Length: 112
Image (cartoon, rainbow, N blue to C red; front, side, top):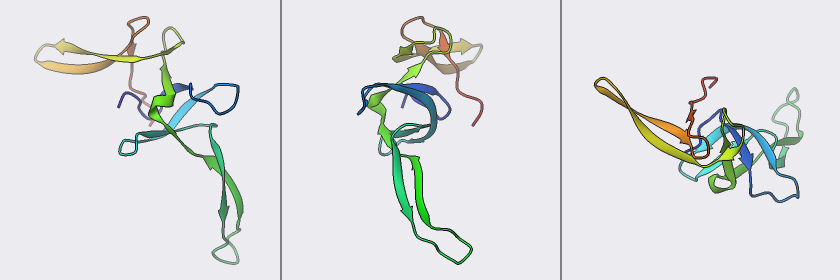
């Protein structure tokens, strides 16, 4: 999967007329979905479990299919497809994500 937790993404498959960009909160590899911050808000009805615990309606982000989001390149700032290249450092080989538009490396987000 080309999208990782913490990436800044652009949602292309939108239900509304305006597209949205946000940070990826979680990735589900099995179902090929991601949760984007502030997008696809759903209402969940929660029952009170005890007298101190409050029930009600909670708004939270719902999953979006991976095919509907594009990674935003940190260097050029545009939504782009992701390519891969192998970088050789001595005896070690590292697979790196690359922007298809400008060719810059897309670093793995550190703030996990």
